[in-house]
Length: 309
Image (cartoon, rainbow, N blue to C red; front, side, top):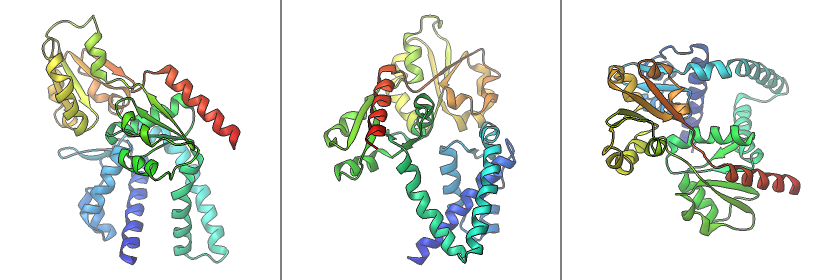
């Protein structure tokens, strides 16, 4: 048990260090994982796991050739609040130490609070099977609802619903995921299926794209790339020349963009690295959600739950 706690603490410490490094060095390469591992006396594998987690959340971007670097957009948006919050938090820690709390007591207190506070405050839980898309879709949903949204992995949420663990929450899932969780609905939760749209669906009904255009789609994840190749590729390729790459693949091979007529992707993927947009004649960016009625329903359920509280 002590080994597990020790690993957990080191994992979180490395995460905070990398976030801090990302904010203070916007757009610059971060130290190699081996160097970070050696300096902190942990395994290289632990550092890589943390980097993968932060990449999914949009803090950093990583690929084999150009290494790992901070996303400048994140840094610009967060730097002021991060610094102010860090100083405020430091003051709280100093007070706790003066009152006799040990470092171990404080760490236990922090993790206990963090494990509960965000989920307790949020009334909306979002889920879908592709976590690479979901992390960003969650942010888009937060902007549309103007409230905090918690993301839960699909299988985790399904298990919690089966065991009736969740109470007084609005569960939001895309239409294609909804049938698998709807049977587990009960009185304490509200469920809303929401219509999502894939960027290549926009291409399928656009009338102003010439035949044989070279269309490059920037996939949000390897799973997204696989889904595109199995669902959209064969149909669209009868009319256009479709190329599908992940963001990391294009960042490593930017010369490929010289051959693109149109670059297509989710807004938050393409905006994460604007260098992808510079060599392309036309860029088509779309959002994840296209469901005004669904958003209205979610807001209505939020109001109901707020009244109950």
